[in-house]
Image 1 (cartoon, rainbow, N blue to C red):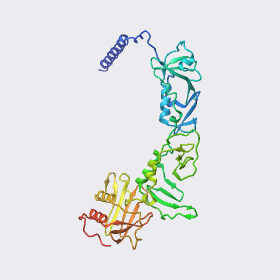
Image 2: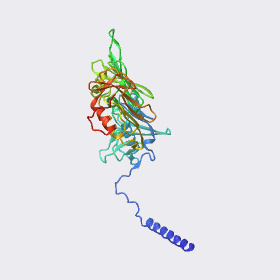
Image 3: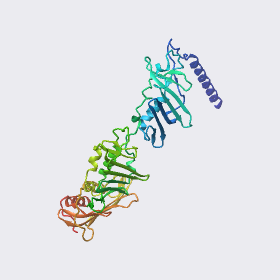
Length: 442
């Protein structure tokens, strides 16, 4: 039995070898080039765009020098600072993929094809081993659509595709226009300081809090509300997004200075602080300076104005407590004498009432802009939301007042009022009774 299988395998292997031989024998030879047809070859075989660590462009009008960094491309000349990484990658890719003819015998002088010192651009790519790959880029050919280049040994060649525009970028087009770059999830503090007051937003655990600081101006101390208050996380996200979107409109030929500083924005992350300053320039037009700009530049501030023009109290949260369904894993609610205390196992809450209670809590809106009456007596109720091992976010409910009950964030802030209708909805969800029945007695 084994001998028969061995013979069968041997026959199959022999047949496969014969078939491969026939295919190789019958495969047509490479098609011969038509008379006058030009052959192209890769200028730098094996070189990939990701291998390039630095690039420089030198011409009679100036030079551009850029280097790859862990955070993307950065310019070293004509001005230092972050580069437009996407544009630099495109430039490098266009260079490493050049295909060119063999050396050409030209009757023209170098200036006729743009390879003289006044017209050409010398491109140097440095790879991760330190090896340099150079070429000079001239003019586009009048026919065939390629560009005349001079390779490292001085041979004049013609590229398959035009590359002259890629090698002659406007230096400003390679500069990053971002005023400041950061990951929103990494920001722990945002401080916006003006002449008279400052708005301070801080992230504690998972929640944002807002407070105000008053400065002395013209001998008078600005009067601001005291204490910290739970902040509107959506408004904070809008502010951070507006800062990320802040772009330089142009790069002045000569450095300009702010005549006065009207606004200073300080971002804090685990890596440190980044500062953005805003103020008028010599001609009165508003300028912005940040980590991405070596000097103040004009910028479109419209998206930032609409976010930062709001007074401090407008940053206070209008929700009872922020509810993050993905990470929330513990829920505790007590309304008078009825209560719920449950945890989540996977996607399911141990107590089936939890989803309904969370829906009610998500719809509750409160007004933290004006301080309510101070809490009195023992807490009548409580809402607690737990996430992971962090301390639970808690709001305690106290005495009845007109329209609702006094509430207080356990973490701080002025007291406020939770409406009777919202409390009735919570109790109805906990007890299964229709809305409108009398709330549990204090």
